[in-house]
Image 1: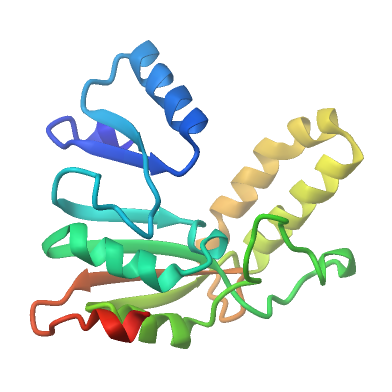
Image 2 (image 1 turned 135 degrees about the vertical axis):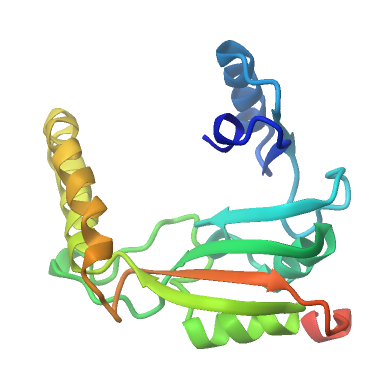
Length: 202
């Protein structure tokens, strides 16, 4: 989507799993996009990812990363002056609608979620000016997410049939303000007024 919307930009995707990056590069070639490439890389050490970036999107990744502070420091290193960072993560202590999801956790998660206040502090320690911390997946988004997971458990065909309705429901979520959503969106900019002390991130 980014590569098509910004044809003059170079878009780089990274994943620690080389089979996923290989698949994505094959797909890129199939659809004929010349301005996007996928590389095998660890977000905690992006030294081998060439280039300096204007924007980093990190969506639902940090909950899988043991040393997420190292990832933030890595993002800071590869962002250009006043580069922007857009991060989405699950929120800690989520309030569920259906009891069966009270203790739900994906096996690959190394933590349940994040506190907005604590994560904003980590961003600042990594050298970012936090612009906003916004709860996501409020009531409608939460309802759509939970119903989607329920239908996936019941029947794959049913899940496929109701998905468009749930997708539309989740699309309306931003119209309702919620302070207790399932996720957190943090937008930040690389600070020009502070020097990052790497020892503080260890």
